[in-house]
Image 1 (tube, rainbow, N blue to C red):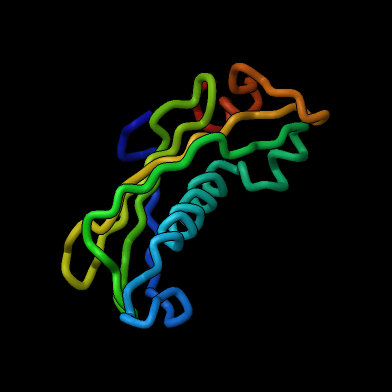
Image 2 (cartoon, rainbow, N blue to C red):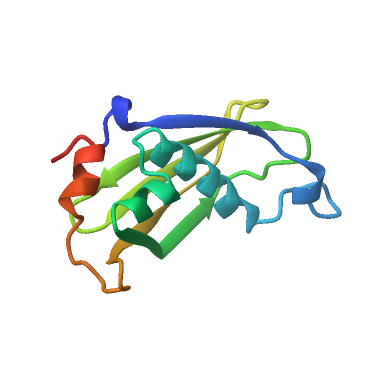
Length: 137
């Protein structure tokens, strides 16, 4: 799954409300930026939240990780790349944030999402209906 056609890029400018008194992005906002890219990645495959519910499933984040390498500051432009690393048993989405002003990687990380059925039961494999939308099934 880790191929260029499965990657999506999302550009964003650091807003003032995301920075601290030193005009540096608060560390927790990087997960928010990951979420913006993940939403775009899923929407590109008709797997937005409402689509998943219509299919009879729910997704829950079971793990998230962010490794910071360089701080973003107020007003800087960033690109957030997101792609699927694995989709067999859970949806493993990887991310990389690049500061476009400095052409420097700022952070990378991942989230893992498990699928629940309509009653909240944990599914141990990704349902075929979701895999088909990912182009795997």
